[in-house]
Image (cartoon, rainbow, N blue to C red; front, side):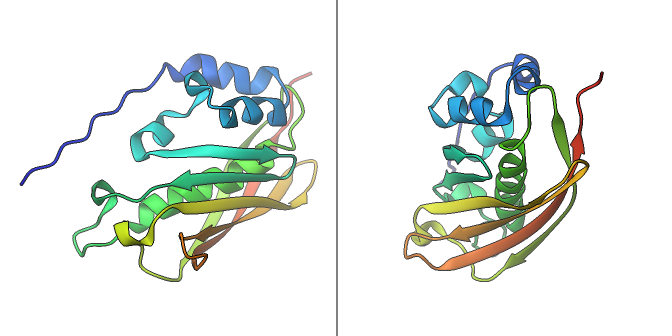
Length: 164
């Protein structure tokens, strides 16, 4: 039986502009407050959302579905990697002043357990480990509904300072 899934998203240009015109934490708190106009199109596509944001720490949630599966019947590692990249990057973003930005330089994801629909709600917590003037390092932990660690990631981000 064929299944279908439909999703929509808002124009990402105003969102990208907003991300640079206020502090990182203010921007993220609006998204966590369910301002759907601010959600990233990739989050809409994969079905994850930012649910908590504080300075240096964020939490995303994802309910795994069959549409996330690879051909061997588990959530594709790329979905978990994207979730981790979002969490590590958003944790760094939460520390940024108005006008600054970031980009991921490197991410390493370790998959510890297969994830399926039976895994239940996934929570991905991103935390800043080191924040410098040019480079930041962060990590993410993905746990399933039973509290089992299913993936771990570390990331290095380049801090893009505001232009003078």
